[in-house]
Amino acid sequence: MSKILITGRNGQLGSELKDLEAYYPQYQMIFLDREEMDLSNSQQIQEVLNSEQPDVIINAGAYTAVDKAESEPELCDLINHKAVEAIGQWAAKNDSKIIHISTDYVFDGTSEIPLKEDDNTAPINTYGLTKLKGEQALQSSGAEYIILRTAWVYSVYGANFVKTMLRLMKEREEIGVVTDQVGTPTYARDLAQTIMNIIDANHFEQGIYHYSNEGKISWYDFAVAIKENKGFKTKINAINSDAFPTPAKRPNFSLLDKTKIKTIFKIRVPDWKESLEEMLAKL
Image (cartoon, rainbow, N blue to C red; front, side, top):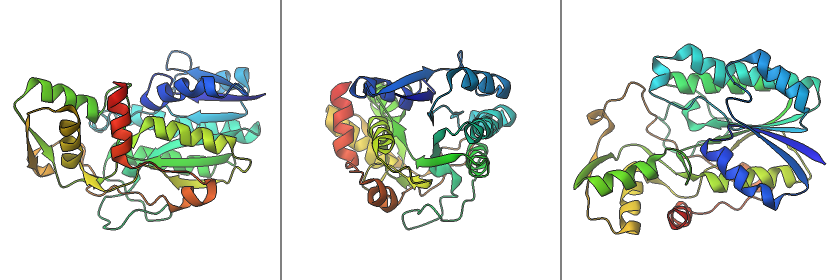
């Protein structure tokens, strides 16, 4: 029986993978959170991996507080870069495969056409830079890897845009949401299912892949869809991101080209609206 070790147990993706565990009795799935394996501690990472000896590692854990990362670059780098390097080195020595979750933030957001896996990377914030360094460390580790870049992740678990909007729309008569950042949301449940489909496939084709839901929207469009689904009366104002300054710059364009993952792993990618409806019904 293959053993799969999953980091980020309590995150959005880790929680969704935990929900899928019952459908995959053929695998022994080990879920770890920060207490059991602290990603900022390379020595502990080695000890835990030596003890568990997983066949596959899904690295769903990360430092994801994008604005806070600007004032905690060292900690962010330890978790998003050095930990990935340590996991990669262990996996290379122990013939273990890695599925590592990365982000659209490795790009600068100036493209106008959907981003392909081999497009030039140029992060514009600390979080994006550390995630790119993590990708590069994994690629040079000698381990068998799949890097899955995703964007705008939300779930019934954890803190995310959808839950923030639901709370604000209950509390306020009027809100402002940025309209000049374009991409597609990713329902973490769909991403979790995609990861399990890749593990289930009989070919582990190494490389970088892009995955998000289908469609092209702005954060404003996303908020409007949430409002309409729930029947809120809140007035939503479309604003530009410069009217809402944050410590970390955000890419203006995050649309990912998913041709590669659909072709190689025969993945069906749901439309963002279909997935949003599914998630809201679950809540």
